[in-house]
Structure formats: structure tokens, C-alpha cells
Image 1 (cartoon, rainbow, N blue to C red):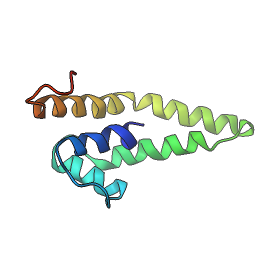
Image 2: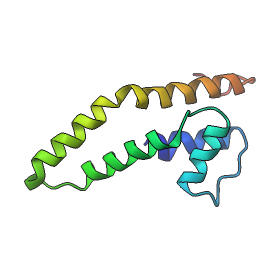
Image 3: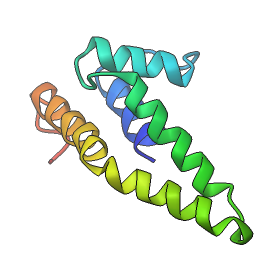
Length: 99
């Protein structure tokens, strides 16, 4: 959700053209704007999320392992969100966002 919605809307808010961009290109723009520190961490979180969403009940151990890995990366995930909010607040001179 953060990668799909918040990252794209953050770039749209600052008038970046993202229509033809792949997700990796979006991450590169975010890194260039210093919203994220590195794209590798985000790609790892996305990979884990994909694993969890495609695992079946018979693969309980793998699902638990993936969820534990996501929990272990909660600080990085929170950091992505906080950095987006800080960036948007700094760019919102008209106070449109109300955040």
C-alpha cells in the first residue's frame, strides 16, 4: 500500500511525471529526492509482502517466517512513511494536505 499509493501520490504532489515509470524508477526518484535512503530495503519488504500474500495454509511455517521478517523490518517501514510525510509537509506551502 505505501509503495503503490503513498509513493506515487507523493511524487504526483510535487508534479513529477510518473505515468510511464516502473516501480524501480519511482524508487529511484524517491531516493533522488532523499525521501528514501535506499531502494533495496523497500524491494525486500515488497518481496516479503508478495510471499505472504501468495502462501497457502499448508505452508504455515513459511508464512510465519515471512511475517516475522516483516515485523523485524517495522522500523524501516515506519521510516519510509515518516519520511514521505515530512517531505510532503515541507513541500505543502499552501497547507493543502492538512497533515
